[in-house]
Image (cartoon, rainbow, N blue to C red; front, top):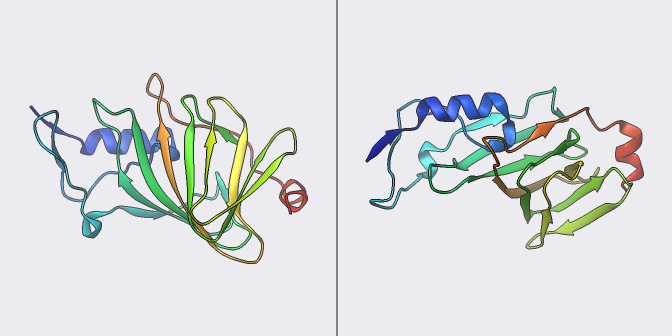
Length: 168
């Protein structure tokens, strides 16, 4: 069974950036349960992180969307120095793996984790958190985000400069 995922990609992006999907210029065909699907680097969709959910310069590179079988998606997200996400939660959790630099992730209780290239963090479902780069270097991480009942992220207010400064 073939399924055109272009409309699904666009709808998911509009409802939550961390779903890590975006409409392809050329419609992608996926053979569900019948053969492997390749997502070529040359076809990778990229976009700048929107100002309403990021502070600073952020680039998102979609790796793959969720599908009818696997309720998770993935992307590389690159944060320039001091860039960070807004507060948010993931209804089904998220894995964060640093591929370059040092990442920060903070929670509402003020705890901040610094983690380095090759290290990962599991963010359990429904934990208010943010993530970003340190103030002196860019950082790239791979996020693998699960969805629950069609939602994979709930965006909240932006992290203040004071909250970010306390993370150092």
